[in-house]
Image 1 (cartoon, rainbow, N blue to C red):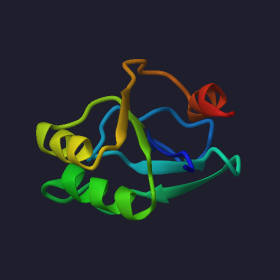
Image 2: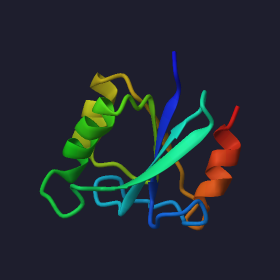
Image 3: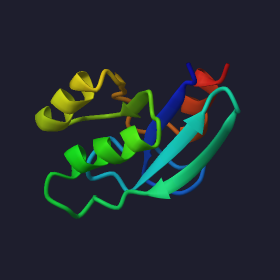
Image 4: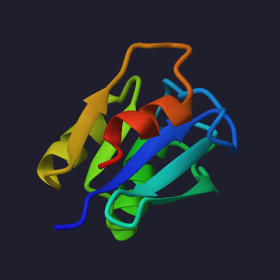
Length: 106
């Protein structure tokens, strides 16, 4: 099975920092490990109510298997568990996206 990661990011480059907020994050880095490719999309739900729940739905449609972020709300957490997505919570506030990518690259 293909491993596709979603990483919350404050910016739009690999030099950007991890966004510790899931539902309210600025951007999402989508990394396909088997192709060793990534793309960055804006979070269309960051200003919406229940943004985390809506974002999980979007990521599921994108084929995401693992979510890497800092914090997640209880409702979004329940859906992630129900959908059997892997969740990795990082508490490092100043970690760059490129460092996370280097950790997960095959």
